[in-house]
Image (cartoon, rainbow, N blue to C red; front, side, top):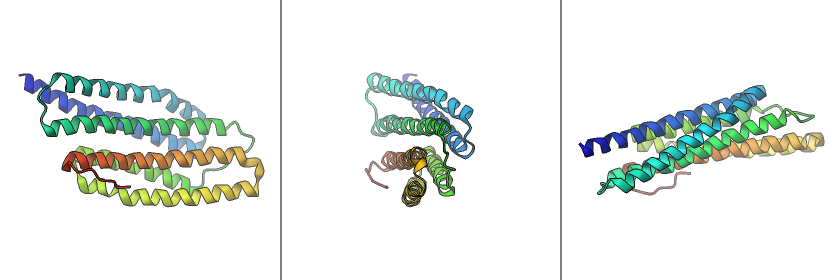
Amino acid sequence: MIRERYARQIGSLREDLLRMGSMVEQALLRAIHTLETWDVTAAAQIISADRQIDEAWHNLEERTIHLLATQQPIVASDLRLITVVTAIAGELERIGDYANSIARRVRRATRRPALITAPPQLIEMANLALQMVNTSLEAFLRQDVALAHSLTASDEQVDALEDQLRDQLIAAVYADPNRVEATIDMLDVVHALERSADRATNIGERVIFLCTSNVETIN
């Protein structure tokens, strides 16, 4: 009976992590939308909803600590799962923070005297980062090592787009110095997206560890 309850608790951890992942994906998707539309109302909603992501993270942390404290002995595979859930939740919380940061930058940018339209490469980079987050969570759901490894190629694409965008945005400042502040906003968005992609690869690395017990670097 006790072990059945324990098995349910383990399963619930997985489900709640995926639920948190869905919240983070939604936040990032909406952040991309605000980049395309300069929708300050949507930006404010993202900022407000970040609290729910933080609460989901803290809840998962508390439950994993409780499991570790009350369920002994824990078999190696379950111990890996519990520690991986905690690590992935932390990565997701940071991605949620980046979505929040993008929303704040969008809201600030709309108050600038000069706006910079998001370049097509920025939207491409944003969608690629979002796809990577989705892939990393799918890899966790399936415990699919090959899918986790596929994040490497996507991360390289994100890095290449980051370099292009930095060069493009800095060139725009030289062409029009009045847009310095707006350009800084865009550069911060680029950084947030690049870090989101990196966090997705970190999740992929945790999935590989969960499945193989091997520690690998894939970015």
